[in-house]
Image 1 (cartoon, helix red, strand yellow):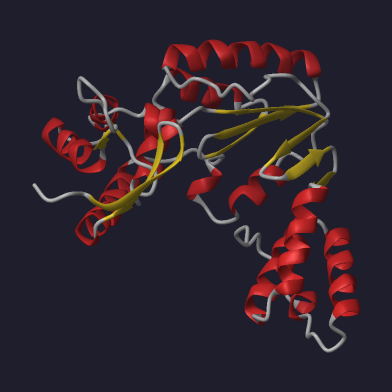
Image 2 (cartoon, helix red, strand yellow; image 1 turned 45 degrees about the horizontal axis):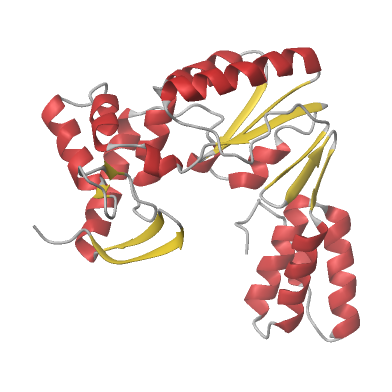
Length: 276
């Protein structure tokens, strides 16, 4: 059987990124389309719609209290057997099993063999999302989404409301449901209710989102050193999609450094572009 991947590299202990083979890439895109045609993702799964993480974070600005958690090694927690069990809801068993086999890789050094979704395959996000939705954690998120604001971006979950007591109860339940689902929260997930949180290098509070100072500084430095106008425009558009004041500051800084620099993003309508 030909290898599903050409290259893999380790970004941290037990965490690998895979570059799929050309054949696996083509199969993966078709699988993502097949699963996506049967699995109706909740409206708050922002990674499966336009707008991405910026739209996910901005969806909470009308609230005052926030809870931010993330699932540890999300794709690595989605085993071949879990994929089969989940997809049986949408496909005959033999199709679900076929998709699970095509979409999983063996964890390096695992004995007995442990197969899971890989980071880097085009179908992994869609399949993992369906598995999350059908888990105890996913069902609980669906339940509370009727009365509270929920956003999911792959493995990052934000919940917000204007009642801190309600959100604290939700926080306790999230821990319980994640454990029951065997989708464990990362150690950095404090599960604390707060009036200001940070996610994706963006600070969220009531009525406001802004880049962290370190992220803003790094983006501004990248733009100032770039000789590619498209890259500069992309950076500025991303900053503008998050915070107008930071965008104005970035434009002013770049203009001071390069007076002849055309700032095209100043007249462009931002649509939550991807992070540079």
